[in-house]
Length: 112
Length: 113
Image (cartoon, rainbow over all chains, first blue to last red; front, side):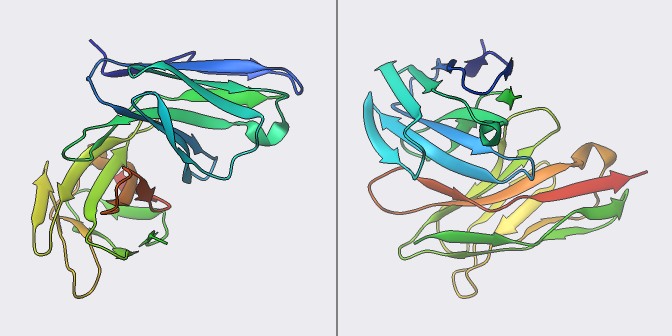
């Protein structure tokens, strides 16, 4: 009964490819996020959805496109992958009253 | 905009030593403040939180007090264990309509036996 799950856990791919990461939460939260964590552990917010509606869209290349088919799922599609996209990507959801964030286990993306 | 500043790591301590990780913030409203912990190979998890001035959050022997006058939320623990080795993130949630959380850069703690 994992709260926030992501697939895959590891993703190794070549430059120029297109890949997707999936995220699901069973906490009943309305708001979900994608974060990127670089090799120095710096965490940067990328997107946030509230009830399937995009509410936060930070300065992210438009090669990254989030999609939320329903409020329990938030997927991330990345086109034309570049070396600099290598990082750990975390999905999270947040409690509507306490604003606590619940993180998934992360997807380590390596672009070669 | 909102920002969080944490002391740079890594911090290396011997077991049973006292821990302080400094965190200061800048926010326009009345933010909620959080400490998250990330163990190796895992996602972040909430360690403790405080929602208003002078609140003290505590969990697993860790404490932090919301100090509005100094805009600080320093993390402390009286006696660290090897199992506390992790990266610690200070964060704030602004008081606006969106649930955006701003994270600090993280401080790596290594506790040696």
